[in-house]
Figure 1: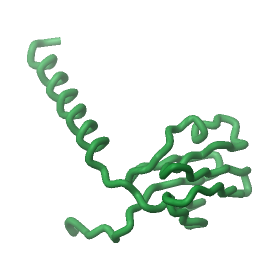
Figure 2: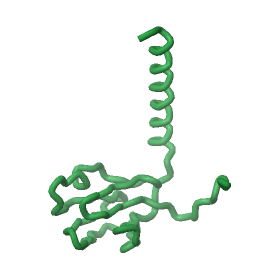
Figure 3: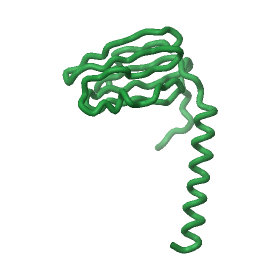
Length: 120
């Protein structure tokens, strides 16, 4: 590797680190956990009310728990259980995905998002 390559990699890592820190500290807290299965919304749960919801799909089930303002997949019968091992989510735009069951839990805010630009 040449000196320029090392500087380029270092610059990319610094920019990525700054973006990560900014996002984790400035992301808006969410208001709802939206559960979708195969792109169809099956439930919209408020994060300010502790609850447990069982998502039943043709491939199996997932248990989504809302507690203390966080959404978490606490149980699933898929073979890899990556969704269960994911961290709890609470900020707008965060997601938990269970690929075997085609289920997504995403956090959305109270207000509708405005369109920033139109691509033509």
